[in-house]
Length: 89
Image: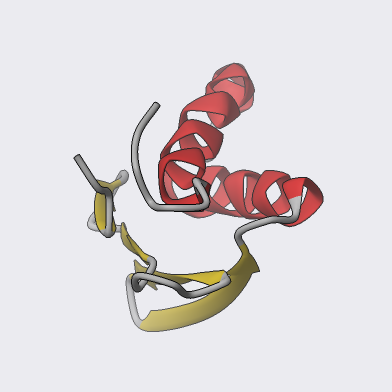
């Protein structure tokens, strides 16, 4: 199985679309919040970049002080796309 796109739904009508084209070295992340659209380019091989994007996704989609422990869920979604061949482990 190969992951090429993951869609995430957050609170209050917020969404994120994570996409990695086959052979690409980056993940495109588009975050849709009420009244705005944000595009991010995440280096798939850079753990720090993936961690930072996971925190950004949490802040945009699920921002709640008691839910910070859930950042790993966003990191896990990014990790599926970050695999060198795009395949799940």
